[in-house]
Amino acid sequence: EDDGFAMTTNDRVRAQYNARIMPEKVVLVRHGQSMGNINEALYATVPDNAMPLTDLGWEQARKTGEILKARIIASGETVHFVVSPYVRTVETFHGIVSAWCDPKEFAHIPDRAKRVKAWYRRLMEMGLTWNEDPRIREQDFGNYQVPEIIKKAKTDRHRFGVFYYRFQNGESASDVFDRVSTFLDSLWRNFDSNRARNYVLVTHGISIRVFLARYFRYTIDQFNMLANPTNCEMVVLGHNGEGQLDLDGRCNLELEKDEETKQTKVVGHRFHHRLRILPKAALRKTKIRISPDD
Image (cartoon, rainbow, N blue to C red; front, side, top):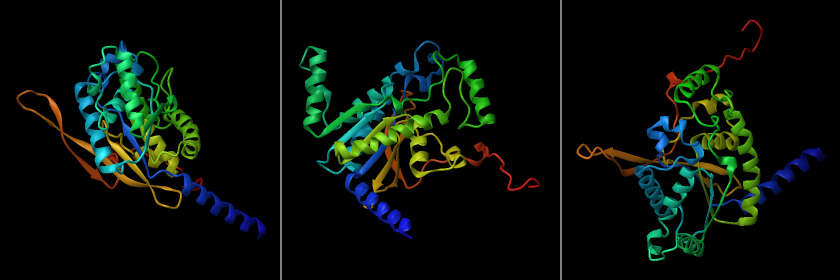
């Protein structure tokens, strides 16, 4: 009985601690459209970590920043960004924070390094801080990626199991789960030391799905049901007041292709209460018996 009482007391103390340090919002953002998203053949010559945004990707990032600032983050509240160090995620971060301060305001400074430094300083004065963390990088698919080999590997992955399939010279989703788990541990410590009222993670689709599975303790079958977020889609988690994060919903951008120019542009956004789920036809479930004759 004493052990049970001690357990209850410890749980209460832990909940009080979490309630004290927990930010108001934790927002997970996938990067904007990259050159690799529209031409996978580029991965044969351009490192995955060096793949930049397209013009549409930049537009998506800027629009996401506007929505984040106007609709999700309360006015005047501090924000800390944690950013995957890949080019497309850092560029997405730059596009997002331009909603707080446009870097064009510093175009009169001829030296680029000084111009960037002045912009960063202004952002920090406005209550924004950030750091890079390679643990929320993209799943490693190897080094340079031959399109035909990767296409076959992704077909094999579906048969083998999305969570466990490891790409040659790369990672499985379970490997990503392990490193995101260590990231979550240090993120909680950061909540206590940084004390920003909001956190935004600018990352990749697989990292978002793994983060959600790890935090909400999804089963592997539940993880496999999650569809990849679209470019610059946001998943919003909110503090419930009791030291826990609940799913507030997700926000995706709406796109439209101009028939004359053939250019795709952002025309709006939409909030949803639930996560994006794969269609049943795309799901693969492993049978687990409850007895030898099941």
